Image (cartoon, rainbow, N blue to C red):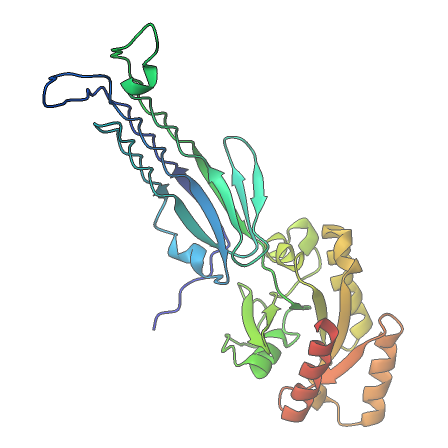
Length: 325
């Protein structure tokens, strides 16, 4: 099966349905060729809605579908029958999508699964001649056309919503740990920016996101900074991975914290757990305890793990689940 590329930005054009026209019709009976007015009103055009679902790959599926059209309303009919309303169009979008109407500048966000938000309203149906009947006009020939539906260019940006977000410098072991915990099967490599897009995994129903590695200057757009940092905004708990390959783990920790603070100070207020990774590189338990103590001066919860030890991975998974349960 081909792997669909991750897409987190998309621009499309959408149009709600046009209302059906009202019509001029006359009531016909056995003994009267043309009775009173009996032209029905047109049906309302279908509206366009955004529907939040748990599928972050959806934007990729729309990559080659640049236009969306709701159904038009039907024209009125004889015998005072109103036209059938056009079917509404639901555009399924991933939870976390932020949709901007480029015409009105209105912004809506999808934060809950199943949430349905009106984007564009369908046009009203026109009036048939029966609706113009009055005491002074018993045989009106008036009718009106249906109104056009609203239309707009929509800018869609996905801001991932995850229970746990793995952050850290490149090669901190985020993707390897995600794979070990969730069998996500994400690509792993020994060079920076192997992860060019966020990877997701699920454990006990909780979503874990592997946010690609941050570098110094990310908040100002260096590297892939802005593209990655925005995905941290809606993560409930940040798990900051520090590789023990770093001789100065404190410096590595402060580098990432500085980028978070400069991009959005609110990010530094989120619950944080630090995990020292690649503990298999340190054979001396005393040295490992000393490294843990260094980081505990900055954050109260510090764990250690190597992906080569299933028991350690399981123990860390339990710590993370307790933090968000």
